[in-house]
Amino acid sequence: MNWNDVAVLLPEIIVTIGASLLLLGPFLRRKPRPAGMSLGLGAGQPAEVSTGDESAKWWMLALLVITAISLIGVSWAAEGLALSAGFSQMFALDAFSIFFKLLFIVVIAMVALLSDDFLRESRYSAWEYYSLLGFALCGMMFMASGVNLITIWVGLELMSLSSYILAGYYKNEEKSTEAAMKYFILGAVSSAILLYGISLIYGVCGSLNLMDIEKSLSTLISNDALMFGIMLLAAGLCFKVAAAPFHVWTPDVYVGAPTPITAFLSTASKAAAFAIFARIFYSALHDFHLDWSNVLATVSALSMIVGNLAAITQTNIKRLLAYSSIGHAGYVLLGIISLSDWGIRGILIYTTVYVFATLGIWATILMMRRHEYAGEEIDDFEGLSKRAPFWAFAMVIFLLSLGGIPPTAGFIGKYYLFSAAIEAGYGWLAIIAVVMSAVSIFYYFKIVVAMYLREGKEADMVITRPLQVVGAVALAVTLIFGVLPAPLITQVEQSSHWMATRAAVPHVGR
Amino acid sequence: MPSTQAYLMLSATLFCVGLIGVIIRRNMITVLMCVELMLNAVNINLVAFSDRLSSLEGQIFAIFIITIAAGEAAVGLAIIIQLYRLRTSINVDEARELHG
Image 1 (spheres, rainbow over the protein chains, first blue to last red):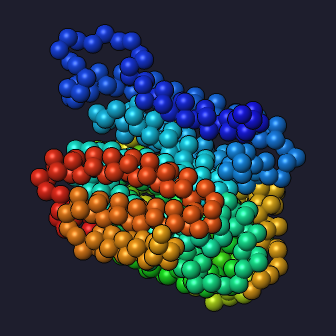
Image 2 (tube, rainbow over the protein chains, first blue to last red):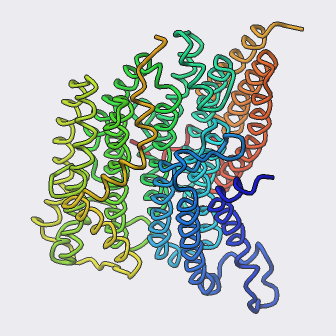
């Protein structure tokens, strides 16, 4: 056994152990149980459950802090190595994966804070909830680090299986269970399609390792089985990022799932899928860029058009954000299609910026949630500027960032992605992207109009401390990176350096 | 011993049967079985390629797929049971609570 390998894997080991211990949480805590209330029968004691819930949150946050510290420590120790791959080239701790892992840890911490309120109100166990979030985080960290298709797929499945369960966490609520069912069926099918693609690529290239695939592709001419494999792989990944022809599940699942989980699905899960999308297409399949770029360009154009146009008519804010997230997937795909150093930087910047703005919006939505599903219609935002002026203002900033208006961070991300598309010769795609951004501003402003120009109903808001923290962090990130993007850009340049050099390799063998 | 091509034909057929089954069948359990069929088609593909390329990676991957497919079936069945408790039907068509 090589101890360096174990050291490289340390953050994942900590998350796995921590998540397993969280599952045991209620049993490890010693507390007096009334007689006759045995396991499995104790369904309806809200008071009893909620006493344990408080500590569950703190244990989860402690776990995330320890993971983040270990990750920073390990990455600091491994500095200087462009790619330190452990476990016979299965797992890499490079700057790219460290960037994404830190992002995932922060996002999961914010989702955990968003969930606090929801878990206290509902009588579902918090320990299992946080444990599943921990396992999802573990899967996402493996996805970011995987340099072998086996690792990538296993990580993807770990994340997906956890999120199927989380989507159905309101298990006595028909909507939530139905969302879980739809997500599960479509997710399982897309995973099988992705695997079929992987099996064909394996058959042609003779390896599942991304580096070996890259090597064998550089000597290969185009070949039907390979093309079919790449297309199926891309289809499976497009499902995970919710790009247009494979987006049908998104609105239903986003509406049905508990709101904190919708926040998780629309941020962390999407970012992780883009991490593997970028990793596979930049580092393994770049020699066949000419073959897949046009297909992905079509997918990207479709996502932007379908997502943004369908969002216009929505009145439910979760559904509106679901369609808008389909549009955002289309923008990020521009970065993959362009296959350049600007493209990969754009993916990293845009993912970060989008994730924080979206989390801020979800935090604001959760403040208005009075009971399980209320506070989700655009009407509920009426008069928010009077009820909570600060959060109405924050909401405007988040929406501007999603729309890509200059003083916010969203502009920087869109600037990188759109110029990458133009540089790569996809001017028409950049034009669609700009037009669709304008359309998106139209429906984002429906919410702004509701908040500022309409008289509000007298509705109470629940502005709790955790929601305030999440909203404040999201607002700070959105504004600081919008005004002062240099630190983020420097970080992203370092993180994407290795991938960018791959993209710069001349397209040989075609 | 049949050629690799024969295995690939078998796997492609199984995969298509599974995919069509997912699309046309209405019963959740049948849909779940069709998904398993698709995953097993992939396994056949991987093992056939592994034999032809004489590399072990494909077989290792197949074992991973079998393991995770079991986990996936467990999660799927749990969701089906919960759905059955709520509406005493596991028909995919009747999932109309969310639409759009």
